[in-house]
Amino acid sequence: MNIAIVYPPIFRDKKIPLLGQNRQFKFTHSRKIKIYPLVPAELATLLKNDGHNVLFLDGINLELRLDSFEKKLWDFNPDVVVLETKTPVIKFHWKYIDGIKSKNKNTICILVGDHCSAFPEESLNNSKVDYVIKGGDYDYIIYKLIKNFNTKENLPGGIYYKENGQIKNTGDVEFIKNLDELPFIDREITNWKIYGEAYLYRPCTYILTGRGCGREGSEIGGVCTFCVWQHLLWERKARLRSSANVAEEIEILVKKYKVYEIFDDNESGALWSTKWLEDFLIEIEKRNLKGKFKISSNARAENLTDEKCKLMKKIGYRLLKVGLESANQETLERIGKLESINEIKENIKRAKNYGFKILITTMVGYPWENEKDVKRTYEVTKELMLYKTHFGDSLQASIIMPYPGTPLYNYAKRNNLLTEYADDYDNYDMEHDILKSDIDTTNWCRKIWNIHTHPLFIIKSALSIRSLKDLELGIRGVSSLLGHTKDY
Image (cartoon, rainbow, N blue to C red; front, top):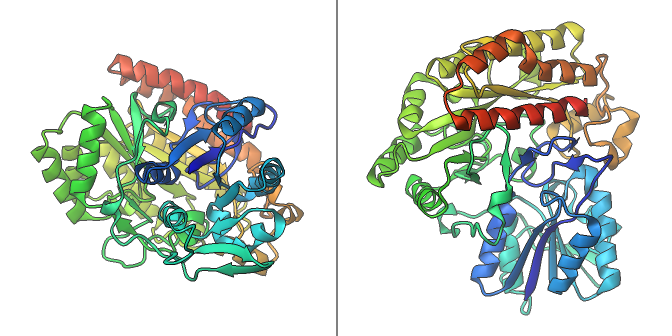
């Protein structure tokens, strides 16, 4: 079959949408945020290995015009089209799917994404989509669905469809038990070179060491109430690939593709498991990879202990993307962060003591916070950014977004904390305040982003530049910052 995995181009006022592999959605002026959509890339690999013709067409990150995108798609003559969607663009995708059906009613359309996991029946009622997939392992589910198109037997759970006008499903979502059974992503067919972010050295690429936000010693991972992926895609379950499997993939990336930096986009990385890090170090040394690549990762602050920092340093970890979210203890408790502000500050500073670069993520617009509270977040973020600043430290600021289906959304709805904008999916774009707030969210986001321009931060960063790669990264960083500040 001819199977197309696509992201139709959607542009708004010269801004591009952050859709693929994104937990938080916005339209941005920055052209330096191109995150590799890893689960769709895994799907493309599974289908190609099974003998299908696969088109991986990311019209957003290729920055294609719609007419050019359409020509590439229809020249391919797809039997199946797979689209990833999210709340702010789901109405666009409904119309797009109906357009596909008007051109060729026999083209099978499949819709995936976190919004689909919250409301799988909704898309079947509002568009001509053939299948809606629930859950985050939609690569495996779609692979099995296509394999069984002719028989409709042995289908995994999580598939929603219509039969004789009635919506049916194949039962509860099924998750891949052993992630090592998945093939390594085919980097060529998925255009790996177009992806990367401003804070990563080039050449770079992305991996998933696992799926879901894990926590050491707990069967339940992170439970942050705003986290759309943790609650809707992974059902708060965390799985890791084996350290040997990850090391084998990295060996290919380093030796075949000459990749210098690898970003682990798993929610909390693999850092939550001390045993995994110990085994991974052994695997890296055994394969003679030590010192031949850099790896950066998402991380929960609670994992930045002395023991783990020492292990990460030996392995070659460079940058850690850590969620602060708010400097107010009440907020951290309300959103289920399971970390105290003092622990977060202490552990981020510890990681910086070990020489790791830190990317801090913050959010503003919590309905229970006032100007004093958000100023505290600003001050703590500034304190951490100016503490032992080294070139490569950075931050992100965004408006808290309660995506439908998350515990935060349900809490806000019960307590009358949603604004009138919450009634229209298009407004969940970080340009509208979905939650009631007494602060100017746009102004505070801009102010937090502008910590990058603090004289001490600039001076300390400049004095720690050590290479041409640093200069190149710095130029990309400034360009990205200008785009972000323009957003606000």
